[in-house]
Every structure is written in C-alpha cells, then in structure tokens.
Length: 206
Image 1 (cartoon, one colour):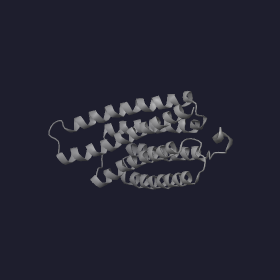
Image 2: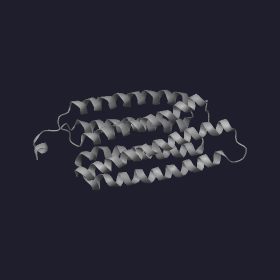
Image 3: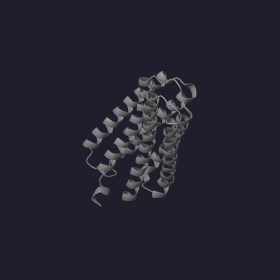
Image 4: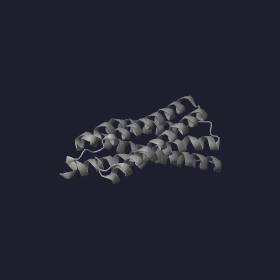
C-alpha cells in the first residue's frame, strides 16, 4: 500500500523500449549485411549501435541508483537492462569476428539465423510497450514466439556446425565459422533470456 501511494519512476519502461529500438536497428544492419554482403560497413554501424546501447545501459543504471521507489523490483530492472545490453553485444560480436577473420562470404545458415534474430527483436519491440501494464496475457504470446524462434535458431546452428565437419574442411575455416555461428546463436539465446525476464516480472507483479 505504501508503495502505491508514492509516485514511481515510470521512465524505466520508456528506456527499455529505447533499448529494444537500438536492437531493432542492429538487427536491420545485420539483415542488410546478409543481403548486400557489405560486411565492413555493417560492422562499423553495429559498433556505433553497440556504443549507443552501452550509453543507454549506463543511463538506466544511474537512474536506478538514484530512484527511491521503482515501478518494479530494482533487481528486475537491473537484470532486464543487462540482458538487453547482452543482446546487442553478441550481435556486434558477429560482425566484429567476420572482419577479424577476413570473412567475405555470407552462408545460407547465417542468413537463416539473422532472419530468426530479426523476428525475435521485432517481438521484443512489440512486448516492451505493454510491460508497464503488468498483464500476463499481453506479454505471453510474444514471449512464446521468441522462445519458438530461439529453438529454431538452435536447430539451424546445430546443423550448420555439423556441416562444417563434412568432407575435408580447412580446420581454420571450421574454427572461424563455428565461432560466428556460436555468437549468432548466443544472440538468439539472449533474446530468449530477455523474454524470460519479462515473463517473470509480469508473473511477479501482475
């Protein structure tokens, strides 16, 4: 009752949506990259977006430290903020490694994994504006779809890695692509982690 009588800082929900928008921009860069093959330019754009995400993460954590009463548990705000930042980190890690390894081709599994990631991020952008309502029925369809997409990403990644070892592959090429696929698959895992945190918040506070 005491908490309900004191105004809370609802700005956090708006900032979560801003984080999701940065992820959306990042996913769009990756989608454009697999379509155009312009890896270097995409890597530079994702590096800037990753910096933007870090700045916003820092702003949220500073606001959290200064807030007396928060709309949801402080631990949930902290966990969700870092999970969103992790998504961006692994997206940027993909293009960073492609440049580092001198990758110039885009494989079909990579196209499919990027498509999964784009769809997951789209669902995150749909669910972010409704978290503040704390209504389970509003968030659960998006969380279920994000989880389904993560399972699809796992399947694509497993098959892609298995195919790397067929025939007489170059061990260095296997190493490079396995690392790239692992980072892409981890990015889809992180999106699922965000969905799980959101579901937990709504179950707790709804």
